[in-house]
Length: 145
Image (tube, rainbow, N blue to C red; front, side, top):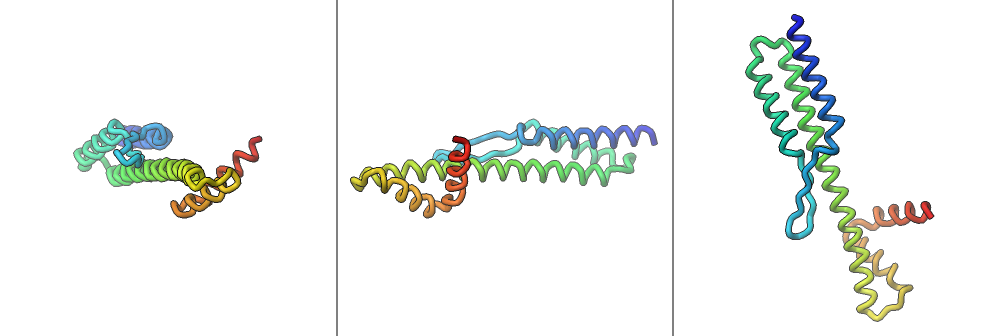
């Protein structure tokens, strides 16, 4: 029974370590269109897969194999969730930047003076679905002054 307790403690410790470091263990890729995608780093994915195979192989002698399976599935889910959130945030920031740039370019092409640039940026940000986020970032920047 003592070996099983140490084995389970080792798995729980690994789970905690993976959760704590999940945010820093993402791999960033950018496609030709500029879309950013984050995914769990290969080392983390390989470690989780190896532990799943080890757990499956020791299922007959490990009374905690079911709990370990749940923990490893949770680790995979958390890593996927963190990667998805990071991807969404990065792409939202890119869309906000593109809205600002396009608004300035459109206002300049229209021959508008600078009073219309803000309106053009707002229009493009609304069309891109990032107006609220851009407005919140702007308020945050004004608060820092």
